Image (tube, rainbow, N blue to C red; front, side, top):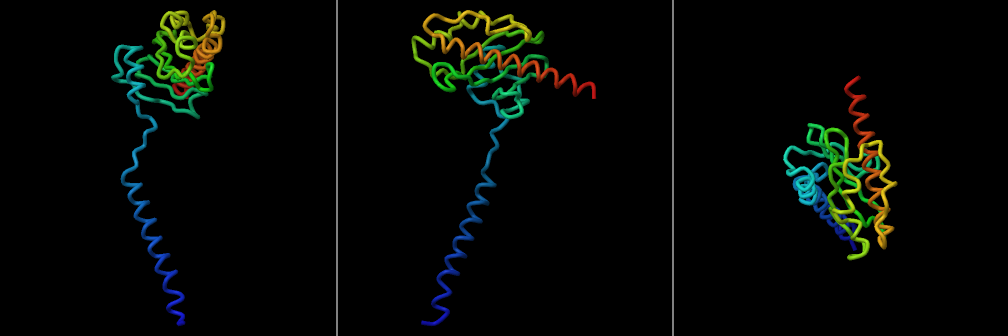
Amino acid sequence: MRIKEIIMPPIVLMLVCSVTCALLTAAYEITYVDTTGVITEKLSAGLAELYGSAEGFGIVMTEGEAFSADSIISDGNGNIAVEVTADGYSKDGLHLLIGFDVNGRVCGISTLDMRDTPGIGSRAADESYYRNFYGMSPDSDPLAVDSVTGATYSSRGVKQAVETARNAYREFTAQKEDDLHE
């Protein structure tokens, strides 16, 4: 056997793999769409539920930089919505959008996703329960709201989500104030 017959197949295979990798990388770079900072259909529907419309809203902070919230969404005029995922009866069973008005009070809560027990835990996601939080200032204590009987874990999850949103709202607005004074 000649050296050429021994060396050529691995070299050809290496070249074929290199060209394939290069083509796959180029296709990825050309077609990649960055979805961070994009308002999804669920978020848009939640914003419309809270504020009547999703127009003018944009994501200003995302998970990791948003103080334990999934994202913070603002219309630039003082209305701020905080997207939060919290544990209810199931881990990460509550995905909520909590809206704050221009005065910093909770103006609404929209359920983006609820994976707790239908008919039992889901009672904590009813508008009648959410109304207990409406009007709360960022200094109020959402944990003081009574739980829904039979939906204790889900109620705790909603209260924890409002608490997380409240903290994220306070830290975000404090950071904005600091940025203005620099």
